[in-house]
Image (tube, rainbow, N blue to C red):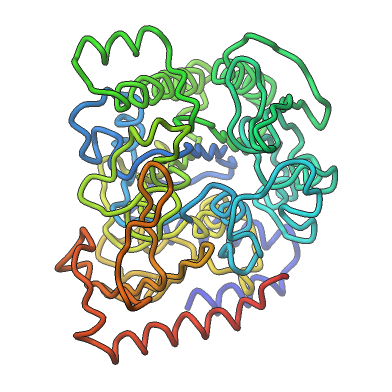
Length: 466
């Protein structure tokens, strides 16, 4: 039915199409959302960095203080089976394009500025371009990590305004990256031009920049991609929060991680308060999620984050590496306090936001699916019967409750592979074994073949770039 309506819609004039689109969106949102008028909703996408699967109170953390993130999640719909990529660049590419990292050709971390050919291809149609074409002002404030050459920078990918580092982790005071053979280099940019704010705390600079953007565009529809670099190492939480967790007796390195996470929570709360003070809260859609699981790298002090009942961490295709906290809120349009247990993935946000904002989007080449049916109906069937991931030697397929990992990796704090098995296959049923503790591959060889065939079929369809 929806496809037939879309087909008719494309034959109409532009003005009539916009009207019909608004009507259709209103009908689809009935029961979920209040009546929608012609005013376009604003959109903020908040992406956190290396936040563990349960590292918010409302996801199960018992030793953290995260009231602002809890409030944000409670104000809309919380997802319990939401998936990202196992490292940051693939997730960031997927959220901006509605495609899998495999299809985009970014399945690993985009390397630093001397690798100019790496990053998001200019021919990819981004979420920023989608909103810009729909009359929105667009901005990225925070971490890009999708290429540093001019044609791959944010301003060439649909963002009117861009502030932050072009590459990966960096020091929040010197703004220096440390991904090039151990050598630091400065990495803070404003609209493609290098700027210097030495000694100023980057999360605070992000907040100031975001508040200016909101002030300037309070009378215009806007899309803000708030790409936090927290709690990614180096852990640099404020003294207030470090003292708080030390006084609570939280052990190292959890205390360092927790202090940085609560510092981020303050930042998110301040951004939300700014929306309220400008009268923008009611008609602003906020998407929230982490880009992958917590890091146990050496520069992350070997850990600090938590996957709770899930196995794995950043860099792993076990649940702890790819299952992340995620939520969507919109006071004017989405009832608060809801939970969805269906499978959803990072690529789903682009078509979902297109539907919610009544923006026409060609979804024929996308892997993401609009979550509108699920937002509207908590009992709706999952939109992803199968889904696949790939990272370095690792591959994973989920089909229903079954999940097959090929060449799975779990790494200790010094990056040694601790998976000891003869076979490259690791099969689990998540319904019975959410911790992925028992390998069923020998018990169900036909299921292994079935799931591997699904991965291979997707691999051919993606036609990956070399």
